[in-house]
Image 1 (cartoon, rainbow, N blue to C red):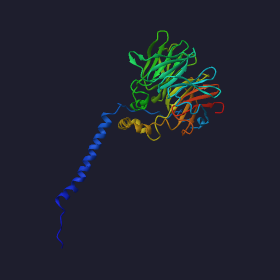
Image 2: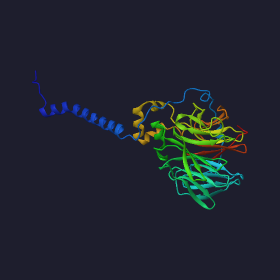
Image 3: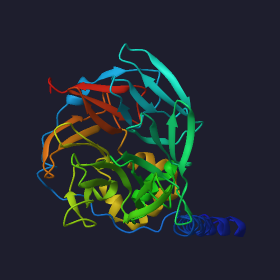
Length: 373
């Protein structure tokens, strides 16, 4: 029998140590990863309760938003909100810093340059000026004579994320602050953190003072006045509901739920001619990834690595708007279930039997004939 030959000592040592060294390396990587996620995460999250099954969520999906006509295609960039004057001229604020006008004859006009890429909600005043929410600069008045900053602070704190605005008949401006912690470019972190950082504010044109109407709102987004201006409706995006705040009557100063368990996060809201409301809905989570919002580890992981947010966030994949009656019941719902024509629709405004649609993921303003739908 041939003598048994043992490998050199250094070879035996190398083979034995390799698994140990590799395991140690993996352990160090895992510890570094855990440290990065837990100690450098930009959020301190809590679990988010997703909508429970309701009559709203059971509405059948359709493709009616795919019938939208594209206005100003290529001329506007991510028009988040739209409004129309008495002549039917469309105003919209875009990502390139312009307030743009789309005329009824089909022409487009660069009207006023604000030099900001954070322009959001807009409204026309009874004086004919435009009031714009700038997520960085605050509340702005834009007119033929130029631009005036109306509000930049409230109670000594900078207004950091002005979102949507509406004017009352007395000239008061009610506007929302989506988050006092996160800015527009990191808005999804507010969804992941799931803590109330939003505000509803009031600007008094007589005193030029800004005051807090409601605080601790869950991403305060769209705001609208009822037809008789006896109450306001404000959207809480990641709470999947809208609140009613009474301005008049025996319930003045009280808050109640207007509608809840919406089949999407409510963005902007607009009063319709018949006294109902149009609400744009966002799909806040991609299908199959709902577990992220109930897992603290998943929340930290996604928040720490921004590329993961694009995967979890579902707003670019579809679009939906709902028409809600004054009693808080859904009348009808329009969808683009696969984002074929429109996705990330953020506003819906009815005018002359058409619905005008803003979106943060389009280069046009949508125009949907309501009689055909």
